[in-house]
Length: 491
Ligand code: SF4
Image (cartoon, rainbow, N blue to C red):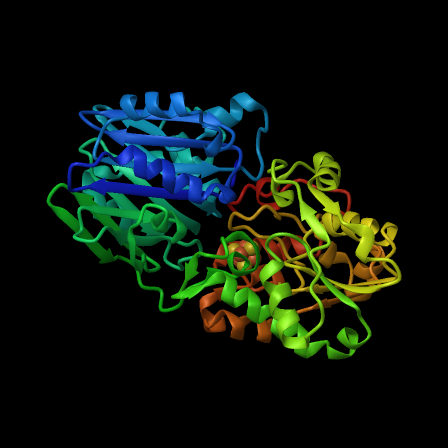
């Protein structure tokens, strides 16, 4: 099964505009959330769909014009994707591309999904028992089929039913065959989703990140609340909080790594939060700062934290690591075999400034450690004497079952080693993490409203906790398959 870390958007035009243009720009702004495939689905007397592999900005102008004619309609949804497991051949990627469309009788349903379903075993059994043959390896198809099978209850009640039964993280956009646009967020609000409109309200839209609204000159109205659903129909928007859990579990990793720095989460710009991360590590590890000459950041997610560290300590921030603009894959989402060589190609070390220097490298997180190891090696080859690593996301030592591609204990360097061990493994002279309490305070959110399971091992949903507890004690160092696939997620 495939879990996804993706980006979604949806738009309904109540004026003379067409949806496709807004969807295109909404995806451009969020392409960092998924590089494998993209897709558009509009509705105008039926569904029109276009999906392809690769990056949205690479759609050529002629193609863009062609598809803007072929995908007419005032309402539509769109999606960028990367699958975190499952079949990685190109045909499978294309088949799994979203928005996905399923039908039942005369009904059709289109869906784009960001997140990961934890009780996938239960859902798969349910769908297969109702004599459905699955056409893809994606959990999105299961979710689509589950929703369409329950659609006789009406859209709102179907979404409520979904929230009550499906465990996991999910921010969803979808279209019904009547042209209703719906969007909802899981009861714990683990993945981002926001809502906005144009001045005057002629265009209304939802987007994973606020940048998907900004790029379309839409004002951000609100975040879709955990357990909330919106339905945009011709006659207006219906919003309802369907499930109230009394807590939320927003993914903390969005703050450190995934979200764009100019996006807003919980009313604050992500780059401001990252700057605070930098100030925090500067305060905590002053004795290291005092015998260093330079701050270097791993571009680009650690740049804001490096700036904060520089502001706090006065230490020079040197842009020694430069990113090649056209090597576009994010290291985190590459195949293991590709990762090291791509990092080598992607980051260039401007080594003139390094000779004889003690440097602090600011990094957003350490998952497997291979990216950082490659960079530290390059810095030392460039003449750096000591390399200390300041990491803004606390130590990751547990897998994520909610859609971030770190689903096994065995792939996490932090599962095996403490700070000294990690430093030894990656060739650093010291590794210093931002303490969890500092991290939480900088986000401006309460710790009880954040998921930090990959750090603490305390999962916000029941089945995920049971799986982690069951597997932790029996981890086989050589087994790199994903835990939730191996255990069928029905335990
Ligand atoms: Fe995010 Fe970590 Fe929770 Fe996964 S386990 S949702 S990466 S905070």
